[in-house]
Length: 81
Ligand code: FES
Image 1: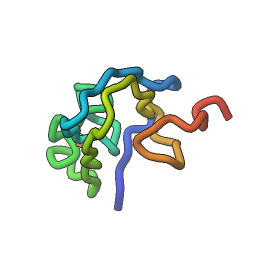
Image 2: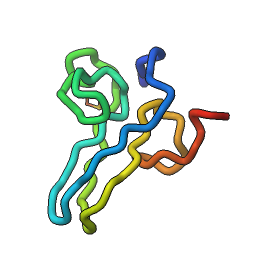
Image 3: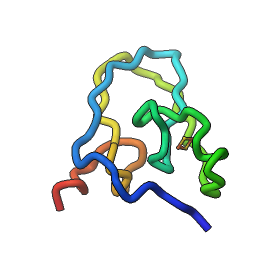
Image 4: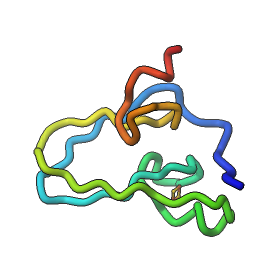
């Protein structure tokens, strides 16, 4: 059973990421680091795991904070629907 935090922000997080870097995107919403995994998914036994993303282009990205996107980890506007 997946236990996702029900109290999440309703706007994306804009971050600049560098080509060649790797991020662990938090899918459970319990991380104290926002959209970046801090291991809380395991401590809270959520049954969820982070999504590992390899960045191929240096630019600003809109990462989904509400976790409703259908294009994880990127914002697709679902927070506004
Ligand atoms: S803390 Fe949420 S996926 Fe790791």
